[in-house]
Length: 510
Image (cartoon, rainbow, N blue to C red; front, side):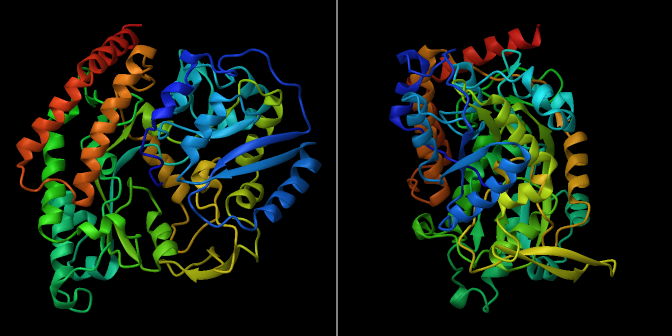
């Protein structure tokens, strides 16, 4: 799943309950209506033909549920900003995409501020199959002060590092998961191995120059740093100071920027740029079909199929680190109901239909068969024929975020995806290491929000420079870290860490 919005804008602080926003915590609900308005996150895909999908959806909902749905699609660039304005101006909508990945507008913060409807008792009443579909332990991650304010969009929850390498290159290197495990190789070694091979392959790297976006490390902060070492950000964004290490008695909140893990991350980024594996122009270049080595965000059964559909090249996926279950990982993608909505029953019935009716879910997530996608057949490794979908290039409806509109386990099978991808993902979720802070969500007081915003911006700026190569390469790793830590401390990092520790202790001692 793509990491969502990684910036906090200055206006967000003004859109909290502190200023007395019109809809904040209000019990004055709007009258029920025969249409629910759903704010959907879309990842930059084409939505020119969305009216056609809306019409097809409403044919179903009107007949089966007795009401209509009005979709509003907001893209990657403006989702957090516009949703923040909606909260602050008491916009009349019924439900929206939310989650822990919405920095500054996270699910837990908005729920604690009173923007979302408490559905703890309503879920079993209006969405009983949805409620029963996930273990009580999973639902516990959605609890804020003991209550549930959002529906979890089901997907991979147990996070560990996923590294995909072009199948031809992996085969040439005789690279297998078994070999990686036996040799004890880490992600860094395997990336270097693959990139050295690419640099020396004249059919890829003319004159030894590696093409831009051949290596894509994406949001490497969470993909590498946090997940590789099973670190828990305590329900908050990983950029905010204060984490714990998963393990028995590992409940001391530390400043991650002073840890050995962050030092390794800085060294890794610098190494990739110094070797020419990532160039500065890549920061402003779109990710292209050149990519042959990619950190996928998290290890996920079937991720090779997603990359094939996006790039047209076969990959082999490898896993590093310990699959970890944290509050943040489970609540990454959610759907919540506006506290002022008079249509909570309709919203929950709609979400239940998305979970229980595969054809309806895929209509919203993918579009219409024959127009937006088509079925084909292929032969698997066992010689068995299977059927899969492929996206039609001429389609003008590409939401590109099937993980944000319900259970991703309902999406139709894709080329190269194993038949048991859902079972494998659920098994990975069920057998993961559980953080000692699972179920805990850090809820900052109003006095801390300025500190959090300031620290976030400082850390975000430095990490983006490390990722895109615009950092000051005349400085040593020690100097980069020293200066960042000093800036964070001057912006209240110690106060944030202390508050996290106090809240975590209270949670653990209940």
